[in-house]
Amino acid sequence: MKKVTSVDGIKDPYTKRILSNILQKDPLRIYAETPSRLMRLVGGLSDKQMRAPRKGGNWSVAQIVAHLCDAELVMGYRIRKVIAESKPRLESYDQDRWAKNLHYLDTDVRTNLRLLRALRDSHLSLLAALKPRELRRYGIHSERGKETVERMVQMLAGHDVNHIRQVASIRSSLKRANR
Image 1 (tube, rainbow, N blue to C red):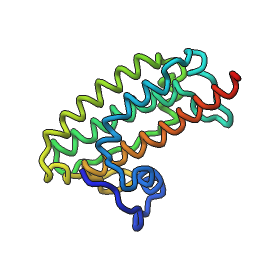
Image 2 (cartoon, one colour):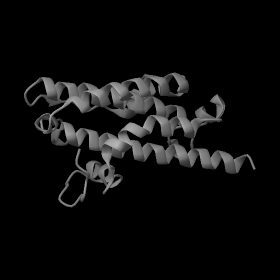
Image 3 (cartoon, rainbow, N blue to C red):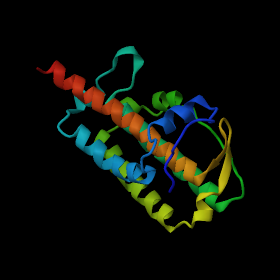
Image 4 (cartoon, helix red, strand yellow):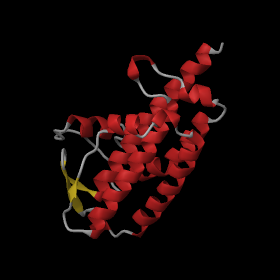
């Protein structure tokens, strides 16, 4: 799995922002380590703390973890679709609608963390079995255009970093509030 060395030339602002989180870093390592990092970050937090509403409509820890589970489900499906089919169409989804309609705030964080770990382990096993040419297979994303399996994993890693930072920030703010 290649490292992202530059985001120059990437036109899509979201892709550019997400990939900038992993510049010069091993995306597969980040991808593999995220569930454990999340488990450590939420360790010791109460359910009330994990569900505490954030200022400005930002997501709580519970909502972030639920979102990461759904992102893993969606991306796992996309990766499988790209590997199994020839240049399939990859639909986007509205994360805010998913958060609202799938009741992210009410989900059990620890159950979601176990699910994320299981899904991630399954996807890592699949990725380890792929040949380099299979990592270059691609689908056509409805908003971003051509996306290879490798790019999807890079995006997942950058997405992970983004949300790990958010959870770390929330945890830090909770510690400050409890002093």
